[in-house]
Length: 248
Image 1 (cartoon, one colour):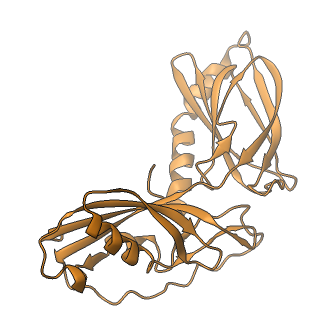
Image 2 (image 1 turned 90 degrees about the horizontal axis):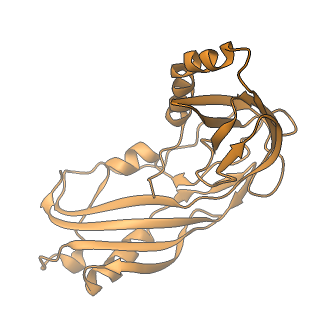
């Protein structure tokens, strides 16, 4: 499960991929004998409502070419793609959970309902004996939004992804006189009020580290996922690494 890095970078990557393959698309469409397929449908958010103004991407395979076509849904969540027949995959930067994820498209018109799901957020926590001096972590206000709210926005740390991913945690006092190292994997959920809750240990190299990892993970605060303006609970997976070495 990949760690989530939300924001404009993910959208730009999809758009750049589309630009890189537009010449191939034109070549496929250039032959008058080339069969055509049209995909029409509606994109739904995780609550089952039409997802308007949401970026949806089709990745299509036509012979030896891979074609990437982005579009935005209309006010009713509707979309249309015109591509060569063959296997396709749906993608959206809003979530990694989408159904159907893949589809075989024949010539002519195919109608499909595409549904977004709530995917788990996966993060790493690094606990080190000799960490760099850490500046105080401050809560970062979410960026101001204009216009309609996104159909779905995933959970993210209160301090923002950049600060969170750069942070190391000093060894807690309960381990100060030990040389214990290892890794603990926890699963739980991000609540609608931004807490890390219902944690359970999936794996642990040391039973003592498992308890400490849970205490540290429970301190992580979040901006919860939202469907429009409604906060929703999200699965979370935390990998906590303990090392007696300094920062990498």
